[in-house]
Length: 398
Ligand code: DP6
Image (cartoon, rainbow, N blue to C red; front, side):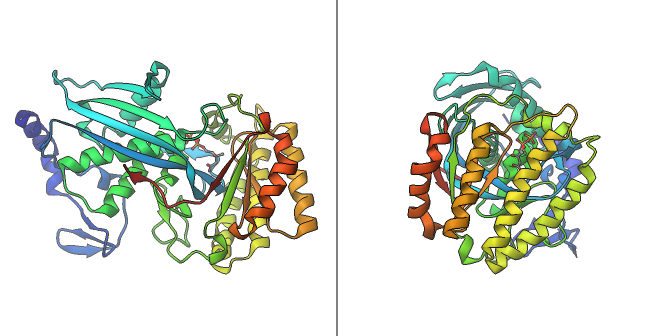
């Protein structure tokens, strides 16, 4: 045990000497006792000195799904987004993950883990986890020192067509950070930032599933702490109109998507409209930040619906092109437009990379929209199914 710790100390010794101490409370970075401008880089997530005080243990976290209002579609190397995005964190759709860790008998450089989904072994997930561990090992060197049993389950139906990678990667990252926290000291601010940073390396949008609403990911001039590396909360108070915002997810198609998000992101390279799209997303983010302050529902609706349709337009205009919407997706959109025209209730839709429709509306119209969904929209859902959700406060330890 101490021998290995010694190796770690030796390995990190040079780095520790140059260690950057970050005081998140005062938002200052202290380097060799000098206060310099607050800026976090990847290196700040490497600097670690471990003291293995525990040989085994268990940690459990739940992390929610999120729905993007300004979409992330297109990325650079190392999961760096091509544009900034913002999402609402949800509260009911979440992943619960328990990680049991125990000291490895053989001290080798390999990862040792088991993965269970709803209590059953799932070898199909191993390559994804192996790849995730490879990407994050640099930041969590203890990964090769322990054996992990990862036991995960979702609160939303298994084959609902709702991507669980965001909530799953966020929950796993928080568990791993909780383990790291047993071997070293860190502030809460650092804990959550690094959890979001690790989650991003698993799945980009997962970095927006750690904290509560709304979360911005990607460097944007109007959010001072925003970063390409992790998600951040708004630096101002969200307007009352957008608190407890409701999201009912209409399950139009619960099958496996024909084209994965990773493939879709890749098709944004050499896409004829990509540069313009990235500019537009950043501009839409500026505008939605104003809306979050002013509470303007009409502007919110026009930005959010345009973002959803633009995302799908990018899919339809890439090479090869593809369509993830289904006929019922369009029926629902038309029904929402008609209902909004007649009732003047500020209800709108957004889409993720699939056929399901997220119906977004203020809490005060819950009853009217619930009737509308049951009476008119559920007919377009597979087996009449939908999930009632709303914005939430982020992940929590169980
Ligand atoms: C359409 O985060 O699933 O939901 O980084 O390759 O794992 P990877 O992609 P992923 O992409 C999500 C795309 C989206 C829009 C969004 O959530 O911003």
